[in-house]
Length: 142
Image (cartoon, rainbow, N blue to C red):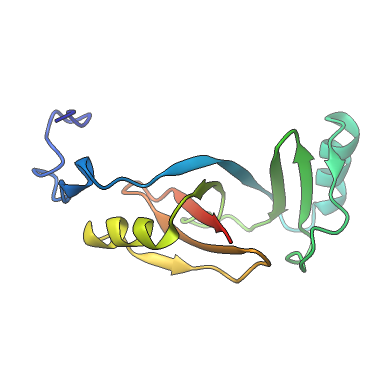
């Protein structure tokens, strides 16, 4: 068993160990979402579009949150949107997995709370927080 940073095993930390056999099957990174202060959309768009030269996605096929902008970077997307400072940020990476249901079972069996996200065409998704408060989204392409 691979030790955790504290030197304790997953069992000692209260995690189920059946996922030595049953694991989340990650396929690839889908997108990263980062935030800018509310009211700063113009500055954010100028930086990412003009300074970094990123290509804005004008119509991703679904409604974007207010003042959000999606960019294409190679085969992944960068999502930027306004957020007031708060303890639990919505910033996150999003990973494509082969089975969202299998991933849900593994996380819930380890006491991880799941948050169902709004539906998107051709995708099922949910998010969860790691033990340190980081938001992680998992997506299954339908």
